[in-house]
Image (cartoon, rainbow over all chains, first blue to last red):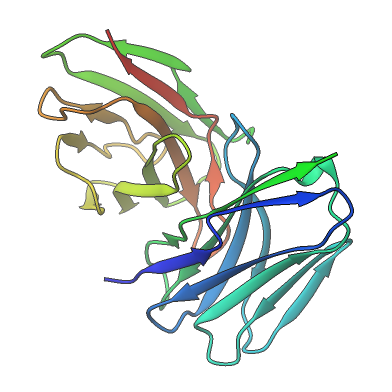
Length: 111
Length: 111
């Protein structure tokens, strides 16, 4: 079945440093979504990427979808303590099918 | 998310007991999902349903059962066959390939 892996599993950064998490799928995706889960909370949708090579920005967050539509990345510039949480990618294949969540990257920001 | 409600927030199970977790949504979404999350881990899919009266097993369905008699409701039963049920359970709903909306989750523990 489809597998979606993320690296790294954990990342500790000093406040103000940049952070990147990478997402790799075993199969070609129709689109990819990114979610953030704060400690003790539930995943909250951040963004969806659909086109090959697509890049989207949300303030300090930059999301990329690979040319082959099998990988994606999330980059945070100048991290803040509010960025703490676990970031998940979620891949969708074909049309109306189940979403496969990545393994997640847990970000800790040291003040 | 305001449109999807999980109850109870905390649940305790005795040995040999079945317990049912409730998930209700008023978003008119066709698809609903149940995930299990262990501490520090990602989301693992238990069951999903794309339409009323139909559901499919996810990656870790053993020891769990579901029903989808109404579009709004997708209850999950954790049976006594699930030997390690302690976890955080998340329900989500989705329309087409749009983002998933999550409930606040239920934390299940063993007495």
